[in-house]
Image (cartoon, rainbow, N blue to C red; front, side, top):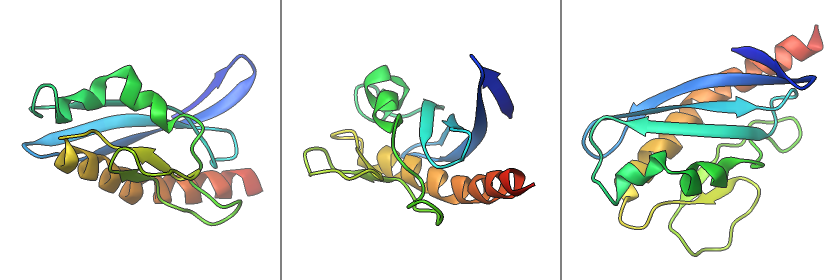
Length: 126
C-alpha cells in the first residue's frame, strides 16, 4: 500500500510467517525512500500469553521504528536479538521467553521486505 500522511509518502507492506504455535503476521510502514521503518504492527493466532503473544504490544512494535533496512542502497535484514545485547541500526531486542516467535518475526520481515525494498527503489527511479 502507498499512503500519504501529512504530506509524507509511506509504503505499507504486509508480512506473514510462523511463530511457535501458528501464524504470525503484521504490517511494516517504510519511509518514502524504502530505507527506514516508520511503523510496525504485529498479530498472531495462538502464541503463548505473556511470552510470544507480546509481539502485539506497543513496547515491542515501537522497537522497530527508526530501524534501517538498508545501508543506503543494499537491503539489510532486521535482526531480532536476545534482549540485552548492544544493538545497531538493523537490530531490535526480541522478547525474553518468546524466542521462537521473535525468530518468526525476523524471518517474515527478512523474506518479505527484500521484495518491497526492490519495488520501492524501482518506483523511485521512475
